[in-house]
Length: 62
Image (cartoon, rainbow, N blue to C red; front, side, top):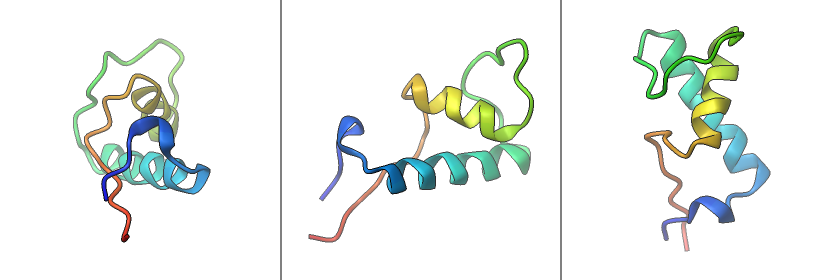
């Protein structure tokens, strides 16, 4: 079962942001224009999450 963006638990949100931050730290290109004052992959991943452009999805076992 795929999960809609607004129905994520705090654990799923943390997992998505962490996985995306790892991708960014390993050299993946950011999907948004990097805001001024952004320090590190985690804050950039949070910004991508807030704009709903993270290229990951959550699939729950039913």
